[in-house]
Every structure is written in structure tokens, then in C-alpha cells.
Amino acid sequence: MAASVQLNLRSFKAPFNLKPIAKQFSRPGRIRCAATTPTKRYSITLLPGDGIGPEVITVAKNVLKLVGSLEGIEFSFQEMPMGGAALDLTGVPLPEETLSAAQRADAVLLGAIGGYKWDKNEKHLKPETGLLQLREGLKVFANLRPATVLPQLVDSSTLKKDVAEGVDLIVVRELTGGIYFGKPRGFGTNEKGEDIGFNTEVYSTHEIARKRRGQLCSVDKANVLEASMLWRKRVTAIASEYPDVELSHMYVDNAAMQLVRYPKQFDTIVTNNIFGDILSDEASMITGSIGMLPSASLGESGPGLFEPIHGSAPDIAGQDKANPLATILSAAMLLKYGLGEANAANRIENAVLDTLNRGFRTGDIYSTGNKLVGCKEMGEEVLKSVDSPVPTAI
Ligand SMILES: NC(=O)C1=CN([C@@H]2O[C@H](COP(=O)(O)OP(=O)(O)OC[C@H]3O[C@@H](n4cnc5c(N)ncnc54)[C@H](O)[C@@H]3O)[C@@H](O)[C@H]2O)C=CC1
Ligand SMILES: CC(C)CC(=O)C(=O)O
Image 1: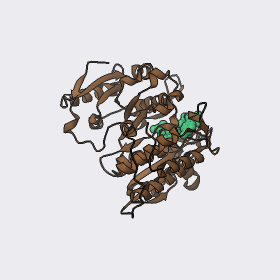
Image 2: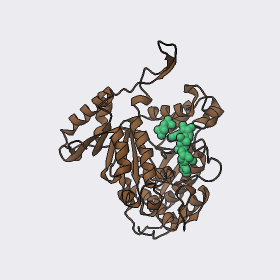
Image 3: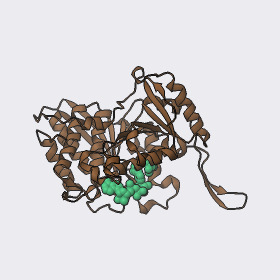
Image 4: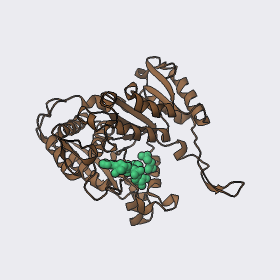
């Protein structure tokens, strides 16, 4: 890593708590099980989407309902079409009604979008375009993707136990800029008449300024890309204002390698849209499965968007094989970061740990000696753990 400078996080106001979710995972304790009269009401827009999306959202919704009833919270859920499902229904991947329902809600929980059926659609008619429009429409620029190796799943990691054990990091990904949105973009022909496709990686200084909200290893490609050079310049400039927190810089190719060589070196990685997408998927395998990783996307104000980091997994869709834990943990992030309901969020996190402690595993995290279950049964076991007055400590 490059020489570090110090950032002082104490003096700036982040709109969210950057403390890795893992820290809260490790707080087992007695759960009060008394049902209370609902005093708080929240509206949640549910966007099941495509593939395994509806399967995992159904499970997460049930978990939210139960936790709400135990914590005196009443949810009103509004389910709206999004992605391929919306294309089939309305001809566009993000209908106006869906976006405005999401904007009006207290928080948004998304399953996943995409599938073979729409892969050949024109760009503006792809499910993925709808997701980018949703993120842009909600102005959720900061995407938090925690990756924690739970002791229960250390054997599911693709890395050796001593490398994976204790990994506890978070990727903070810029979400509404960079190459996913930059212009010019498109298709054309070069001087030899060959077809070309081109995109533009562009960052403006105000977008990078937002990145100071981490305590950080800033990942870029500043040895080659101008947008990364500006990124590093801004991050370094901001760093000088915050002397108490360490900042280091790393090139993305090295970061990809370091993540599998010695992942414990990372606490918070802050990076751009595309590098964050790729590195967080890579980090997911250290934890055992992409089916385990939740995410929260937050802006300055307005509802946050909460979604598992995985896609619609068309290869297992409709077979009751999906791991719902990433979506359940996204619901926990929704409670914690979106609604400020930390107790309710802790209930969910503890219930997930308890379910794993009781040996229940979907196929993606299965190891010998455990009980193989499908998406629905995993959800039912999590509900039992939510109800359990004393969760098992890890
Ligand atoms: N946020 C979103 O909605 C995203 C959507 N996509 C879309 O999803 C579709 C499939 O993309 P892929 O690249 O295959 O990525 P993917 O994440 O859907 O699947 C990759 C692999 O992980 C497995 N997997 C994913 N989630 C799982 C879960 N919860 N439990 C068990 N196994 C799980 C799948 O079965 C597959 O083998 C594409 O249309 C893509 O554009 C991809 C990434 C994110
Ligand atoms: C538009 C999405 C499919 C991009 C993606 O992979 C993600 O952000 O998770």
C-alpha cells in the first residue's frame, strides 16, 4: 500500500454509520420477545424483479413483518414491477409509477433484475437499464457492501481457512457516476469500418468529494485513467482535512489480487462504480457465497435502496434453490441505515446467525454435516430464530 495519510471522520457528518455490519453481527444477547402495540409505521416499496428476485423478496418480507410485530413497527408494503417483469407488463424496465412509489416510500427493497429473455433487447429496453435509472432516480450515490466471513461459514470460503477467517471489510462503491453513466457511449465503426462499442469513465469533483465518507483504502487505476487521477487527487486533498483516520491508495489490479492473497488487510475500501461492483463480487466468495452479501444504497436524503449484491440467477430461478440470506440481511440494513431501527435490525442479524448455528444451509453454502434446505425452508428457519427469545451466541 502507498504511504498513508490521516482522515478525521469525527468531524464530518456521514448520513449513515460506516461501521461494518459485521461488528453488529457479533453482538449476541438476550432478545425481548414481548409483542408491543405498533407505534411506528413505515412504507416499504418492494421490487421483486426477475429470476430469484420474487423468491428471496417473499422470504425477506415475512421476516420484516415478524420483526416489526415484535418491535412495535407496522410496515405497509407496496409491490411494484421492475426490470424484466415490468418490461413484460408495461414495455419499459422502470415504469414511472414504480419510480414514484419508490421515491415516496420510507425505504425500497429490491430482489434482482435481468434474465436471458431480455438479454438481446436494445439497451433502453434492458432490465439492467431500469436498475440504473432507479439508482439515479433515487439519487443513491453511496453503495455499502459489507463482506464478513462468519465463523459458521468459514469452510464455505473458496480461500484457505487461515486466509478467510476473521475477514471483515466493507466496500463503499460510488453508484451513480463513472463508466455506467458516462457519455459519450454507444456503438459505431472505426476508420477500418469495424464495429466498435465505447463507454466513458467520467467523474466530476463533486462526485468524488462524496467519497470521503469512508475510512479507507481508496482503490483506483490512477496509473492509467484520467478519471482515476482526478479521483485520487480529490481523495488525497480531502484526506489532509481529516488527520485521524488512515487513508491508503491501491491500484485496482493489485486490490483484486490482495483480496484473495490477504483480505484481512482491508477494513473499508472506497472506490468507483465499476471497480466496486467487481471487487464486491470477488469479496463475496471469500465469505462463502454471493448469496450472503447484502447492500445499502444511500443518498443525502430520501429513501435508501436495499438489495442483495447478487443478480437474478436465472440458472436456479424457480427451483427453490436461492439463498435468501443476502436479501434478509439487506432488510436488516434497511432497518438500520434506512429507518434507524437498530434493535429490529439486530434481531434479524442474530436470527441469521442462529439459523446458521442450527446447521441450516442452502446449496451454495452447504458443507457436510449440515442440513440442506431450499429458499423457503431457510426463510422459515430464520422466522423461528427471530421468534426465539435467546439467540445462540457465536
Ligand atoms: N442487482 C441486480 O439486480 C443484478 C442483476 N444482474 C443480472 O442478473 C442476471 C444473471 O447475472 P449473473 O452474472 O449470472 O449473476 P448472478 O449473481 O445472478 O449469478 C451468478 C452465480 O451466482 C449464483 N447465485 C446468485 N445469487 C444466488 C443466491 N442468492 N443463492 C444461490 N446462488 C446464487 C447463481 O446461481 C449463478 O451461478 C443477468 O441478467 C444480470 O444482468 C447481475 C448482477 C446484479
Ligand atoms: C445494472 C446492474 C446489473 C449492475 C450490477 O451488476 C450491479 O450494480 O449490481
